[in-house]
Image 1 (cartoon, helix red, strand yellow):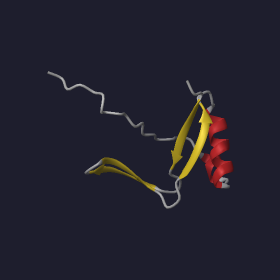
Image 2 (cartoon, helix red, strand yellow):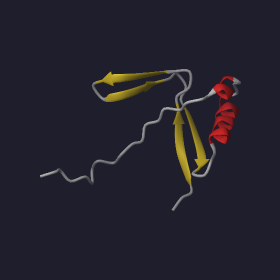
Image 3 (cartoon, one colour):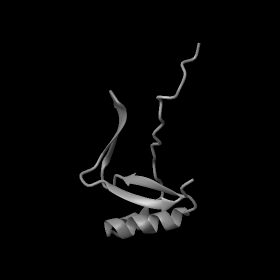
Length: 78
């Protein structure tokens, strides 16, 4: 099993909560970051700051997230 995960970071963007597709993230330049599973919150903030080259990420206190689920293998409840 791989010990890393790919994150798509939408920084300085918007989150639209009630759309026809559910939640929608909007950002002009989303960023892909590969991180280990065992990264601390402080380390994650540092990686984000380094990748976007901004001091703003040092002020991160909350990271909303969305986890994709493969529904092709789900069985309907009967």
